[in-house]
Image 1 (tube, rainbow, N blue to C red):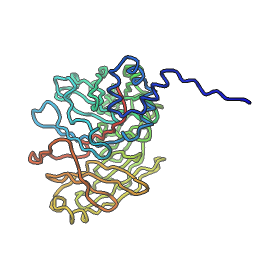
Image 2: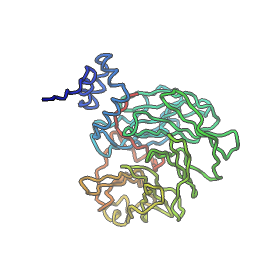
Image 3: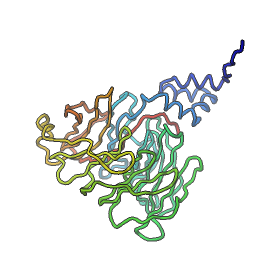
Image 4: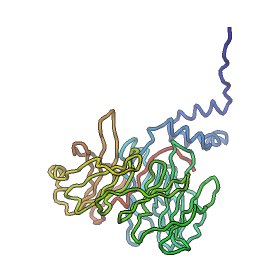
Length: 373
């Protein structure tokens, strides 16, 4: 009779298997127990496996950022959307030591790109940070005059490594841009291909959206771009045939979503989704805000409205997707399938008396995946 031998497991394999089963908060604490555990938990392959094994740490909410006069740090709110509220990060960047103050520039799957706040480009520093563990790492200086946008490309389900993509000015002309890529493997910035030309219109390079392995940008006109950090190819993508002002552009649940405003959003709007093959947009939801206004006085009396965040979510084949909007003095959240209202929580005080106005351009989705800098 022939017996097959079970594969041998060394001590590292056994301990890694145990650590993979721990909750995130306990796991981070285990890094301080001994050097051996710290080495195991810091390994990129372990981080990758932990993210795959623990999907419960997926998107937990979004940061909302506003700038106040004479305040050193940007004003932050954090709204949990799903998952454990106690796992939400504190709405503060004060753990980053920068005498110029700090603001968020971009977010992607649990990581934030932050920068110095009240200073010129020549004095601005950039940081990659993880707010739940209050870790941050300063990036090397970007040797350019102007940074039009900086974005993170990170998908823990594809790779344990992230990349940072910056859109900088070019020596060729004022209408050319140079892409520079930072990788933690190399620890430095490198130019990507040749500078590319952009038309004389406002491209929202400061609002890059990571989806389908690429970064995406839209403009105030009919131009939209996508960039694959792996192949380093910049391609165009179609925009809807009817041109309107961007009212929202973001990703949720593996879907790239767009809202264009052709007038006041208080009348209603369409939420469009990009097809997976980039062949075009289709209407995912049509929102009749009249039905919402009949149930909510704040929406009924609102003379303006902005979309903050859209969450695409299905639970056992039931569409539980919802939208968060801002009307004067109030944040409102409701489901897209039946307009039923949802409790919107935040872990700090919202002062509506300040008269602050928020829009999607100040929103930074946050995914509480396991990543340790």
